[in-house]
Image 1 (cartoon, helix red, strand yellow):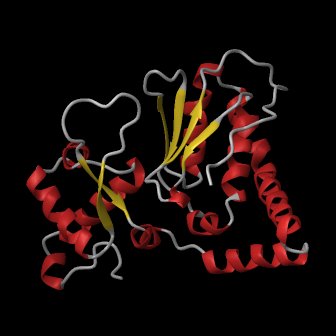
Image 2: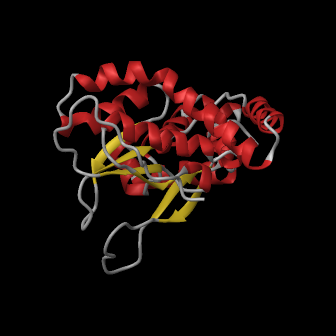
Length: 247
């Protein structure tokens, strides 16, 4: 697979590589996008965006998909969106997936495999997020309850998750926390305990029950977590039953 934007020398001179990287990066940061959305964000014409997308599709960096619709469908055919492939994500993420999978596999086997092994991996995943809890709580403690989802999104973005917050589509009440990038997506495909621990972590931070609706690890374009409208809670409030990642 070519790296994102890998093109012949004659194209480099015209800035094609840089623009193509911008298109791919915009999809990484904002999730699956239509041609019109990309053109607006990047200040390009739609024909120019289509040309770059054609090249990225040919390089297996992005792939076209039918737009996922939440809530009531409108008339007409859903617009086509373009999402990063696993290869496309790899081009941005210099991760140690193989090492991580081997380490978690060793933890599972050392605990005896089966349910004990799964429990050991889950304990590791929860401990991993617990180590970050104080930093995130400091950020959220100084924010009004109704602004905490947005604050959490910004904190996650600073850690490489390209996260955003948006109002949940009707008839749902509340917000959706969307992570457009997951540095451990390939590992989470084999060890969903990582996603489950993250969901529980969000619930404890926000002091409310949250529900994971979609994950990159399961083939969705964005990790999406539903967060009900947050009323005022004391700082000691915790969520004992965070939504589990769908398996």
